[in-house]
Image 1 (tube, rainbow, N blue to C red):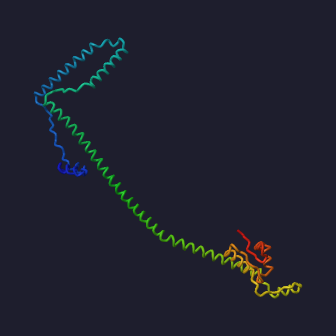
Image 2 (image 1 turned 135 degrees about the vertical axis):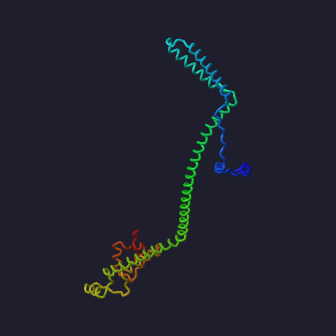
Image 3 (image 1 turned 30 degrees about the vertical axis):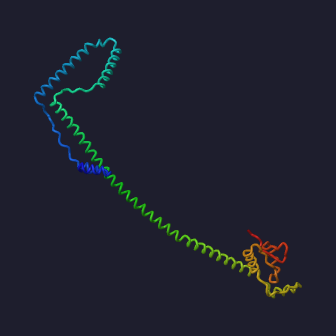
Length: 289
C-alpha cells in the first residue's frame, strides 16, 4: 500500500489495513557490517585503551595506599566502605556516559555491531508476533464459526417459538370452547346416569300403590281411595330438584292430589323435604349445601 493510498484512507476516515501493511511491507535493507577498522583507527583506539588502563591502574594504587590497615577497626572499615560504595553509585547514576573514542570510523563500526544485534532481536520479536497473530487468527475463525452456529440455533428456536405462539393463539379459544363443551356433556351424562339409577332404585323399592295394596288396606278397615293420576316418588323428587334449580328464589311446590301422602310424609320425616313455614300445602327440597 502506497503512502498516497494511506493518506486517502485516513482522510476518508477508513481504518488502515494493518494485516496487508504487515504483509506488503518490504524487508528492511541489510545493514552493512563493518568488521574491521583501518590500522590508524586501530592504533588510535589501542592507545586510548592503554591510557585508560594506565589511569585505572594509577587510581587503584591510590585507593590501596589510602586504605588503612584492615586489622584495626574492621567494623568501622566496613561502614566506611559501604558509604563510599553508595556515594560512588550515586555519582555513576547522575553522570552522563562518555564515548570511549571520538574517531568516527570506530564509532561507525561499533554502531553497526549494535544495529546488527538490535536487528536480530527485532527479527525474533517479529517472528514471535507473526506466530501469535496466526494463532489468534485461527482462534478468531473458530469463534466466528461457533457464533454463527449459535445464531442459527437461536434463529431456529425463535421461529419455532413464534410459530407455536401463533398456533396457540389460533387454537386457544377453540380448544377452550371444546373443552368446556366436553365437560358439560360429561356432567350431563353423569347426571343422566344418576337420575336413571335413582329412578330404578325408587321404582323397585318405592312403587306406586296398586289395586292389590288398596284391597289389603280395605280388609284392615282402612279406607283408601286410589287416584289414577298419582305421580311416582321419582317424579316428585325430580319436580322438587327442577324447581330448586329453575326458581331458587321460590323453590316451593304445591301439594295436590297427585302426591301420594305416605311418600310426602316420608320425605318430610327423613329430612329430604320441608314444609313452607306459612303454607302447609307447599314443600321444598331441603338445602344440602
